[in-house]
Length: 127
Picture 1 (tube, rainbow, N blue to C red):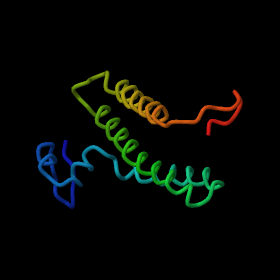
Picture 2: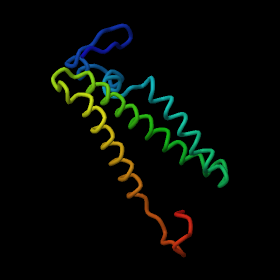
Picture 3: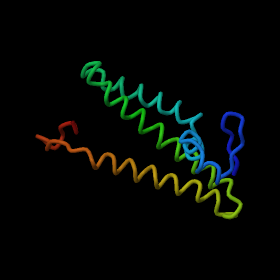
Picture 4: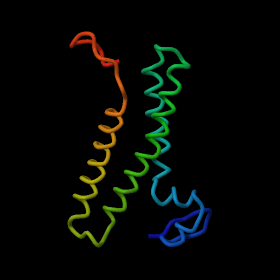
């Protein structure tokens, strides 16, 4: 596969030797990732704003950074799997299932890592 970087065309072997920017362009769909990151960062900020602007900011920034890299990676993976000639008829099913499994797994992992205090009652909110 070929990638463009500042008007220069790079192939797979050149990308590994090139700058970190070229490496990110190969594995992250930046053009879509920044939009998803901005949107979800603003959503998290709005949700947490009731706790104060300074309290909401770290959560929003974490969500923005996480969304940028994870959504960008998953979109690029989808694209690469769907366009793969080597996979034949399995390309589209794999382009759906593999990224979905990664997204579900990462979401479960991120929510499992966060320590929460025990709930006082069974119906109390999870925070």
